[in-house]
Length: 104
Image 1 (tube, one colour):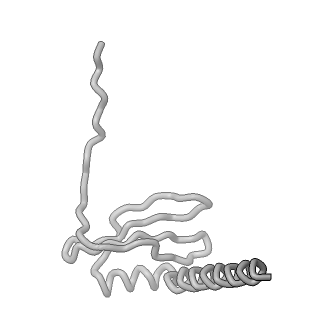
Image 2 (image 1 turned 90 degrees about the horizontal axis):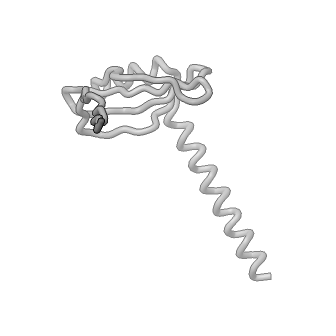
C-alpha cells in the first residue's frame, strides 16, 4: 500500500512538473513579427545569423553590439517564434577554419 501511494505521489509530481514546463514554454512564444519588434525595441537586438533546423524550423541569433545582449530563437512553420536562450556579453566572431597540416 505504501509503495502504491508513493508511486501515485511521484506520478502526480511528474505530471505537475511537465505541465509547468509546457506552460512556461508557451509563454516564451508569440507571433514572429511581435517577437522581433520586442527584441529590437526593448534590447536593441537585430538578427545576426540564421539557419534551418529540424522539421522546417528557422533558428536565428539576435544580438546588440551596443548592449551586448543576445537571444536565440526558433520559428516554427506556423509562424510562431519561441525564445530558446538569451544572455549577455555578445561578441561577433569571424574565425577561419583551421586546416589540418599535411605531413606528406
